[in-house]
Length: 252
Image (tube, rainbow, N blue to C red; front, top):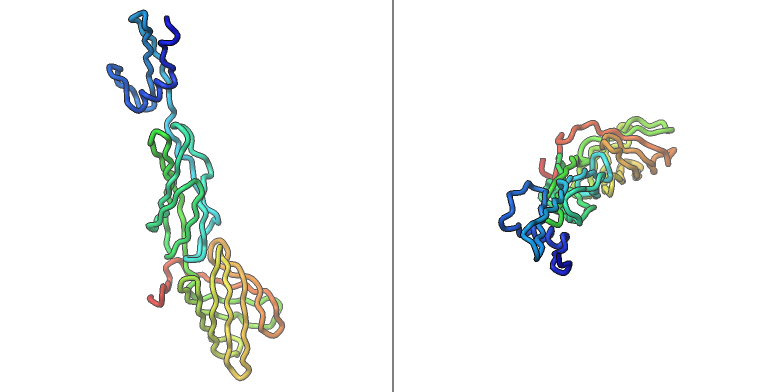
């Protein structure tokens, strides 16, 4: 048998996997059969290589929990890497709101509230694909937040907030005798909210709230200044469920 007439198995395997081998029996997906024929005999030898099926792995997001529309930037990533198939892999994503991404760890902000499913597609070097998905929940901060003050003699203050993009407007009918108040503020990544409320009564003043919203979008807590006896800490609750009294761009 002439060594120089032998075809390397690795090169034949690549050729067979893409173009097939004329006269070879039908093969199962994931199995490559390579036939090597010498130049001095009609006998053949067969080597069979099995390629494992492409495993899609699993994906998740950071931050976890519910995000704020427009403000929260979710970073997607593989919590368990794809395996099998023939590496290297490429990755594409559909975020469930019409947005697309690419790479192993893309980022995306949702511009509307709702429940979404982000789908990652891993493609191996043969073009085989496998998908993994993760749910994403997004809300607006629109609604009534009831503020409880810590360490000062103030009643719980209801603040009605409307979110438009990352901007906020607010109205307060004070439970503490300050009259009617109006406010502006913003939300920012990942779940921070700031708001300044101005009371224009007999002794005008402004109160500023700076804080973070929890993972469930149910409480907002931080520091407030402007009231007598403050700076002090506060906790505000927002019990409304997703979809309750949601306002987008002034439309209910």
